[in-house]
Amino acid sequence: MAEALKRTPLHAVHVKAGARMVPFGGWEMPVQYAGIVEEHRTVRSAVGLFDVSHMGEFEIAGPGAFAVLQRLTTNDVGALAPGQVQYSLLCYPDGGIVDDLTLYRLADDRFMLTVNASNIDKDWAWVTDHGRSDARWKNVSAETALLAVQGPRAEALVGRLADVDLTGIGYYRFARGHVAGVASIVSRTGYTGEDGFELYVDASQAMSLWDALMDAGKADGIMPVGLGARDTLRLEMKYALYGNDIDQTTNPIEAGLGWVVKLAKGEFIGRAPIAKAKTEGPRRKLVGFEMVDRAVARHGYRILKDGAEIGVVTSGSYGPQVDKYIGMGYVPTDCSGVGEEFEVEVRGKGQRAKVVQTPLYPSKVKKA
Image (cartoon, rainbow, N blue to C red; front, top):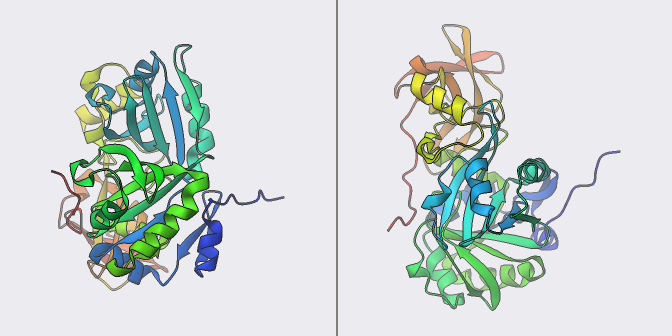
């Protein structure tokens, strides 16, 4: 018998709002409310509210926590001060990717990892297999809800409800405070390319915070946003999605994630094969492309050159803001330059596409 889909603390809110619910990574999640294009454009022009409570959160604390994370993750945990966030990877010994994650330094010897929903059990087994007696792991996924408020009006909206000065929170930084009276970790992070925040709260408080944000955001044109627009927003930015664009068969270098691999920090799991790929250069690269012919490239479609298969589409859709059919995929390095053309096989027919500069849409995140 199929396992029942898990539900976030906001499930009833989505159903009441008329969301179309779909299975995703073992969860029943809203794919759209008003419609993907409208939700996408609202995030780009105003503000959107996402339920991302399906993501997993692990805490690790103790004097050995730093050493454990330096060995497990590819980025340099030593560069992280309390109050800062880091994008990083867990890798296998062969350099394949276990998962991508964000790492929060909550205090000198206390950290939180946010991992992908479909990987919670796998990741938990992986990290706890590499523990130390002086570092304690705790899986807080079930008791943690996560709401993302994204778009050019996000700061003003959250700022009206928060008791902390949001203008002082830089990109990939966070503060503890209250939003609409709810104790929150307020993190200036996201998966859209827009400015905005991710709010970590106790699961029991998720509904009251959601309602407060929706109510206070009416004047800003707020909309709830489902997984469909979350996907098209990240695709315009060429943000990788685990299970599509990166997985255990992909090396961080070929995936364009060398910037979160810090070889100089010393030994970590997967270091040698990643270093080899960096030195020798990868045989293939993950590229962003746009369709020249009017056709939609989908995950799994073959990429052809002169009739021969050279790669595969990992993600593809219509990009509402760029108004083009766009995608990502792995192609041989000598076919990966901007302007290179190939064909995507759509229903048995080759449709022309070309490699483009990424991101396809300019990032609006607040770097300063």
